[in-house]
Amino acid sequence: MLSLCVICFFIQIASSNSNSGIQVNHSQRFSVSVSSMKNGWSLQMNVCSIKGCSQMFKYEDNSLTSSPKKQGLVLNIFNQNSGKSIFQKTFLLGKYWAYWSDLEWHIKRTAPGRIVAMTIAVTGAVGLRNASVTLNHLGSSFATHLTSFSQWNWVFIKGGRTIMESVVLGGRADNYAHGEHYLNFNAPSATSVVELQRWNYCQDYGAMGGLCDTYNPDPLPVSNPLSLTINPHALDNVPIIVTAGTRHQYLYHSITNLLKAPGVVRNNILLVLGDTSPAMVQLIELLDLKYTKLPMKSDVSTKKTFGIENIKLFNYYKHVFELVLKMFSNAPAVIFLDEDVEVSPDFFSYMSQTLWLLETDESLYCINGFSQLGLDGLAHNSARINRGEMQIEWGYAITLKFIKEVLELWKSNSKAQDTALYDFWIYRHASNGRECIFPEVSRTRHYGVGVNAVVDVVENVFLRMKLVTESQVPLQNVTRLQLSHWRPDIIQSIKNSETIRGNPCSPDFLPLSSTSPKRNSNTKIYSFFYRLDRNSDGYPDYVQYFLTMACFGTWSQSEQGHHDGITIISPRVNTLLYIIGVPFSSYSYLKPNNIPLWDIDTVDEKVFQFNAKRMAIINHANWVWPNITSTDDMIRILSS
Image 1 (tube, rainbow, N blue to C red):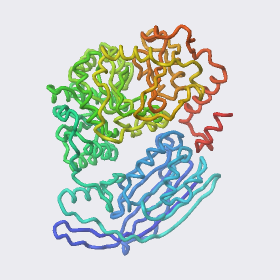
Image 2 (cartoon, rainbow, N blue to C red):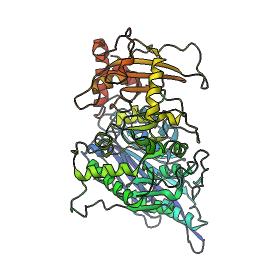
Image 3 (spheres, rainbow, N blue to C red):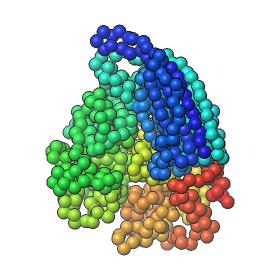
Image 4 (cartoon, one colour):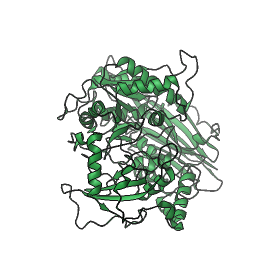
């Protein structure tokens, strides 16, 4: 199956002499041949002056691929001034979950005027989903009509018009199209050294959002944000470490949000680069930020390589910790962020109000800006803060004392490296039963799709996370987060709660509110007791925990987020639900004698069949699912 699109169009380039400021107009022909095939894809391009152009070249099949990582929808972005390819990425849209959102993210951050070419390699329509609507609004005629195994090409001007679009919806056929388009483009003129550096950078790189938007560019430098009104000097000596690699599109989005957040101390920001690229370094220098690079190719002491993928990431973060300990040994704590983590405007205010707890409460080891339990519909109060067992996650703070503990464990190798995920390893082997502070509503959002992306979790969890959009939120009862206060408060809350019976998998499980909830009214507290056994390793029974939490629609991918067997969610405004695992929790004695313990093992077989069917779809979504291209299709399968 072959869908072939051949395009030839002219670009009138306005180049500028930086010394004289004189613009010289000259015309060039930019020609591109792009094909979508059942066994790969191909793209060839050529730029020459109009007078010097030869005949249109013939299509040649030179990009066959069998690798699953190269099968999907391929996005190519070209500089509208020079015709140079400035971005290419394959989105694995042969899979149903989440990759469509990453495609949308990059498309939305492609500057108006850019030349965009999209083509399907092998299969890339199954997971297009919501992104098809975005592409339709941008001018595609076929995006909302593609079948699961369509072969499709589309070349267009972002914010302008379609140059060429071709499709083969099914079967075996060739599709050939040819078109010409004439563009007039005036290159932006630079009025300062920074602006000149910006536009030179934008000549080479795409999907950079407002940085390269010639019509409405982001201001450079990023304007200074407001100072904190609560604990304004709490973060003065706290380093902000941003770990980064090669994904400069992600970094620009994350850094600009960070620099706009009230309370940021710009001089405290240090970017630590592992594997990197000239594009990343140029961007950091353009933004005038401090950075350092780690030698990721080999270990100087052992002469061994750092490994690949997660093993390499594990070793990278180990060396980041060593660097931080060496450079900031006197810091009270350190804030860590990744290149694909977006902070809320309230991030630094939240940190300034909670960071002191790490020094006063030895039962804590981290302050997380991310909330595993903060899914949309289960998190309402931006001022409410919780504590529980969890790993460091996407915008966190830890002390130098704890960093030393972790490094000692790594050096002594006293614990087996039973996972390649550094943050989960720290949780399992270094937390020693200590907990983390985390907000009900997240102060960070993890939006990137990378090597560790479990795409069904990305979509069903991370994309559902709320993010606080206001700033300088006064937090409630921060002092009561200390364990000496927290436990008595929990006990009293459960004693005063209304205990619920029934099946949490039922849609009418939670009692209806007699009145419409108001944000300034008193909080209604419910409690629910379910069977949760303790495994031999001391952790909760995973199956019991997963199935129960899945019924509530909250985080269920691991046992994290609970405090001593209690998971706290907010199913509606001014409502708290304490979900208490018995006999795992030390609070089990609070279960009233007349209330039966709900046991997942006693659930009707039909519920198990439904959950099994649901999980089968999730687990097999990494394979190509013909004709499953919408949420409605998923619902029909679940209901069959």
